[in-house]
Length: 473
Image (cartoon, rainbow, N blue to C red; front, side):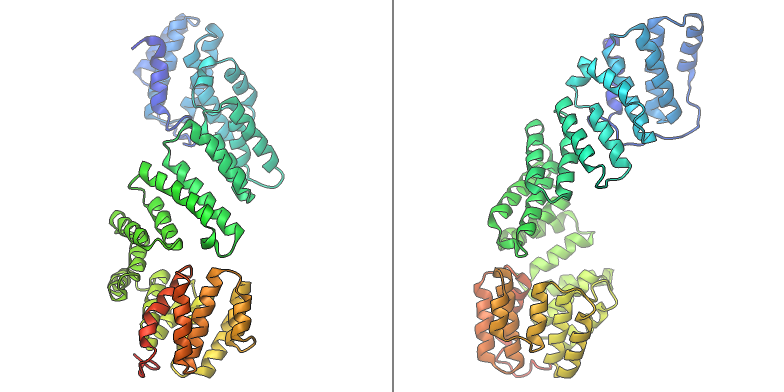
């Protein structure tokens, strides 16, 4: 290999990405020299201005740094590279090395002291400008972010990131950081537009498409509480997640996002496929097994219960698994078991989740404990902040508004679906099975934007005419 580029080749081996700024340096005090370094240092004592020897020392330092990420060694590299460039200011690979280690030092100290020198090197190096290394403004943005993101420095950070994109359009992390800030500000269109610029530079990054998909979900959520009805943004999210999976077929997080999105958009066969794939990739984690268990509700609740039982063997107190178990008992009319598991959940982080409280209230009423149900529901829901729709459901069951009043308060297809189900269940509690059947069928007619209520209506419909389900064990 040409000696001129040996140092650049060695240095590139050290880089984790375009610019290895994220990996902290070791502060190890272990021996930072070796026989080669000592030999060159001895020669330099006799020939301090010898260009070849000075460059050879830089190469020896780099080789040692590759084995020992010592901060002291990094400072020696900076010192030696500065000395060498006085002797030979046209050596581009050494400029690149000095730039990298000055950047490391700036990030280590959270200091902008090195920024003027970094800017000088960057502006006078054709090689650095051609790489995908972080430009000075990006490094300054990193330092500002390290100090903490607050309202006072957000405009400055954004300005520095815009400057960084102009300085080196090939450094994609500038786009990522800027997009993240716009995301925090709920400016999702700008966040997406910035990442689309990055896409033109590197269209083979699965993380990029996953983030774009997340942003379209954020956009849909910000638009409406029933974000599953925002077909335009969810369609774009699906396209982004599919591209991410195409580029990284075994990434479990993207498969999880895709499965959830298929669920929300009522593409049940695709949801089942993704849930199974996630389970195959992630059988040891609760995440993959939870999705697989929940997907089985759409096929056969009894099979879902077997999977839930396996989860409980591993962790009998897992809140999400207990929630799945409660839902199984609820939709199969096993009220005593449902109540027992729901009471167990009271000790978990999900104790005051509104819909868990609502289901327990309905179970208590189904078991003939109307007074206890009302007292429980009134007391527990008073201890949490209710969303407007949750408050309307509470008012309905406490007799403060009629079923028509509840329907008039439903603002979207999600709330209408829930209203049909819970009105139907109320009629069932009152013995009006005909009206309960009508409302359960209306629940199913909406598709399944509120998929828990949809599944419950589907499984409870056959039980309406049974006489033993008021106290089934």
